[in-house]
Length: 388
Image (cartoon, rainbow, N blue to C red; front, side, top):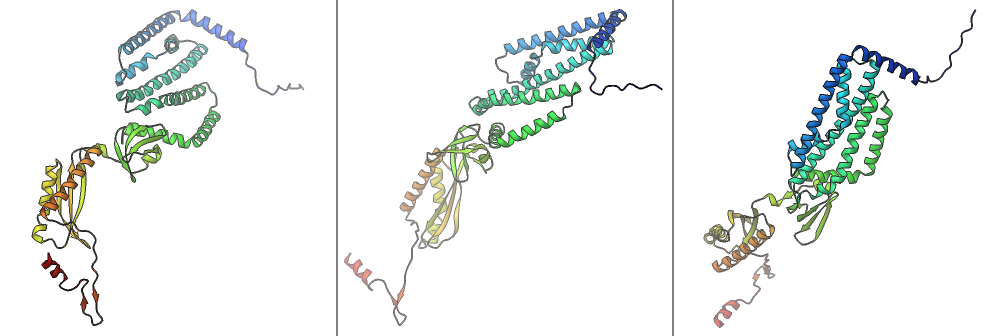
């Protein structure tokens, strides 16, 4: 009866010397049996490397000759110009070991390095394309996109971190490393950072939304809630307006986009409405003349008459309305036009004998027997008239 020797429990230490000897032996056998295929594959690999190098040099030269990278074609060419030498070498090496029937050990090593180079190169290409699109938006109108210019450093850092973090995870996963814990850790860390800087990121993304969606731009006059003002600056966190009364109004980008915004600059005209009330003693024949008089006043002041007419009986007046447009988007021009038309209405009504109504109240007093007592001596007005 033989006693079995218990094998030691614990991790097995890899024998690097044995692995290296195996690699040398396989390489020698491969070189001696497939030298013809190897020569052909090396020739093809060198040709691929040269072709990729020529493409990169052509792309770099094309980019250097271009004054601005605002076209999609130029953005793509600039990305191609960032092709690394390591990637070109590994593409050639991958083709060599594939067509020359390389041993498994050599093929595995080359494939690992090719995977790393391909993932990193893809991240570099994507980074250049994404940043190129942001730069295209920036160079389209540098004055308008001042906010994007200020945010480019932060955007560049954010894009680079995201792309290369994903590339690192993909490389580790292809190398057989369990990345579940790493992904979970990055997720928890991202959530913590997001919660800590929730307000900052919210306003930043709101600023980018304003830049790309363009509900308004610098110099536009907008109105929200009870505020009317001209946009002076769109910042990363807040937008600054100059109100029509002169104050500087500062509001966070998130709060501003959450409101109903009326962009007055997009209008080629501004509409104004006047409510006009005349006294009840106005003769109907004379009241019918009012809309036509108002139309002449509006048109004589370079405005567009829309409509005018009777709208109702007030407590102390017969009410009319006037709608007209002033052909300008500038608030100052509209204000001046409204001023001229209003004073012209006052002057014309005075000349035509129309009296504007104002709130009045008449009090009647009666004697104990019910007889009306006049608020003035009877015949008083007649005496005054005779005396006059």
